[in-house]
Length: 103
Image 1 (cartoon, rainbow, N blue to C red):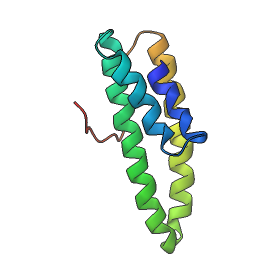
Image 2 (image 1 turned 90 degrees about the vertical axis):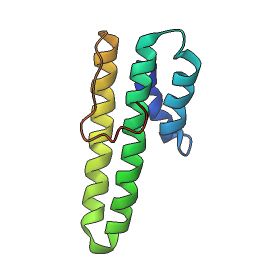
Image 3 (image 1 turned 60 degrees about the horizontal axis):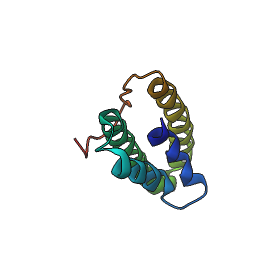
Image 4 (image 1 turned 180 degrees about the vertical axis):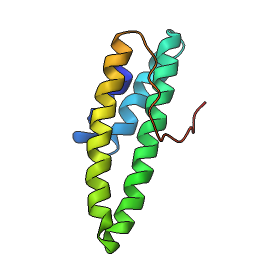
């Protein structure tokens, strides 16, 4: 669960949404197999969100980027909360529209 919730570190630290899950995953992946799976999933999602936000920032020139950035931000918050709840119940949550960088 901490792998998913540590993504909210991005509110305080720049790139904390990626660094938080990365640190938790690197420390605990060998001790707990479930942390390995959740950590990979969380990292893939946070990297995907960063890419989607970068593309949206470019689309600000066409005005649609503002709306995309808001939608991506809200979706990221909601999906992280859903994934955290699923993880606390012992289930693996697969984020939608996630690019799988780490397998």
